[in-house]
Image (cartoon, rainbow, N blue to C red):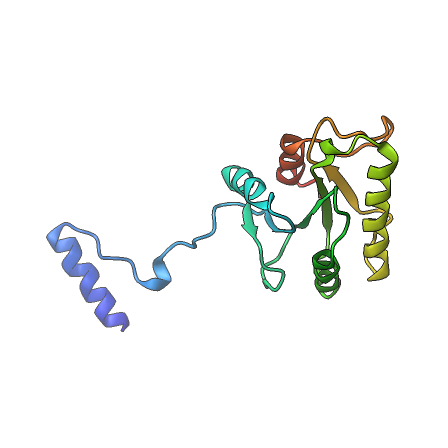
Length: 171
């Protein structure tokens, strides 16, 4: 095989063209970045994924991926609270070695009661704790800059801030 490739390279040089790359020579499909994140959750994931890919972040949606992952982003509709799918997601994350999390509350601008929004976050933190994950210290974010959160609560708010948080590697 090596002799054949050498022969093709010599003939190609003689003819002034370059040989077609073999499978081993083809570059990876992955964009050039050292950030790989998994995004799971509700339907708004598509918009977030597109924004992250635009910033050259490699985005996966499969929790069974064996790639080294810098962050797992869980999206939850704040109007519904944690659903059974979120329990399943948390169970699967608990089995991973790389389980750094960012829990994003979507539709947070539609809840105008701070206590209700805090309750939804508390439920999600308790779910993480139940499966041995760091629910008390997990980073939460809200998709809207209009989310009614305590002024002393520091977290990314709005999609742009969330994307920047992920890109900067603060997760």
